[in-house]
Amino acid sequence: MLGVAVLLALATMPSQTVIVSLFNASYREKLGLSVADLSLAYTIGTLVAAVPLSWVGRAADRFGIRVVAGTIVVAYTLALMFLTIASHAILLGFGFFLIRFLGQGSLGMLSGHTIAMWFERRLGVAHSVLTVGGFAAGSAILPKPVAWMITNYGATKSLMLLALGVFVCTMPAIVFLFRNKPEDIGQFLDGDDHEHATHDVMHGGRPPANDPAFTAAQARATLPFWILLTVGCTSGCIGTALLFHMQTMIERGGAAGTEDQAASANQAWAMAFGIGLLCVGWMADKFRPRFLLPIAPAFMLAGSLVCWRGATGRVDAEEVVGTMTLGMVLFGIGMAFSVAVSGPAVARYFGRTHHGSIRGFMTTFGVAATGIAPFLAGFWYERAGEDFGPVLIGFAVWCVPLFFATMLLNKPTPPTERDLEPEPDRIDMQDVEL
Image (cartoon, rainbow, N blue to C red; front, top):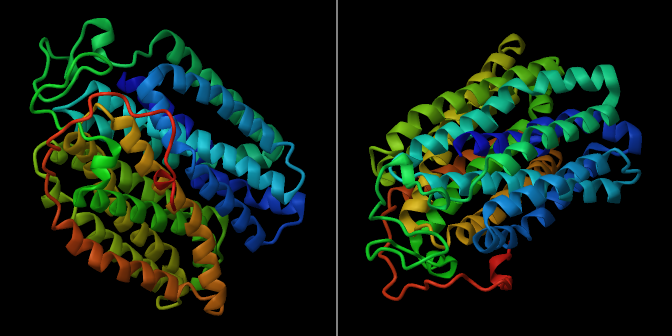
């Protein structure tokens, strides 16, 4: 199932900032929008998209990932097509909501949920392969071909081609290959020839005595949950802001600020992120999260400071692109530690029984963080007199307390009374507070 999960992750690329930003000029020209208006539409669409994600996680727990993923792919394909007919800023914002909810949010969450159902001992490596093969590889490879399509065929045809690609690449795999869990076909976690003692059999029987089996509410009552959530939100927030505004930052640093220069810096980030994931994924299966996770905010701090030098004219004009590229490499390494350590830790700390609900709640906040980042960074930039310096310093400062918080990470004590029944279909408002 790892290959199918990678396809689901790769299918999220048309909804990821690194691809969406390539259409910004087309949207602005077609609808007569300013940079601020476009950023606001993107932010509002993404923030609203974060709200229903907990429902998707619960639906996956109840109906199975296969049914939910197939439904999401169909809706996501239609959402990409809808963007081609958006004729107003409000419709564009609604289109952003659809693709960010269905693509980046739902398919991204379901791909991670899938490998948590199939791997335990090798979950760290599997999670890294998923992120490298899906998100990192897509971020490194797809931007230039998509930019070429936009130049040669226009934004409308390019979106239609992306929609068609999503459907053709994922739906056959979901229909003919996908299975919810190894127990459905008489197999066991990690491809072993016997059942693990550490995880339950989903949707049947009782979890083993030593399985955590946290409910989403019980997980939220622990400090490790909020540490893992904050690290993930921070890496997504800062990373999205850097990607979305890279071209402007390079320009403000004194270079030309061309699309090719921005693509070079962003591709360096994707490569560092992908290579880092492979290495850190192996380490995540060997070392405790508390020893690895503090490295994430340390590198994110370093990357923010290096980008600050490049974006504020503190280096020569010919060195701006190289400086920004170095900053993105450092940030990519930090993000690799964040993703490769936090993802497996969630399944190992809180169990599989309510993993969909727990991941859905965390993804809600993660999507919200990536959504608000471009607008806040742009707003802060304008308030500072078109200077990204305060923005990047703010990012760096935030990483300092986060570094010390990650050093407090420990495996939570399992609840004394475990809820073995599926959580209710309804969703409490506390699950969607932003």
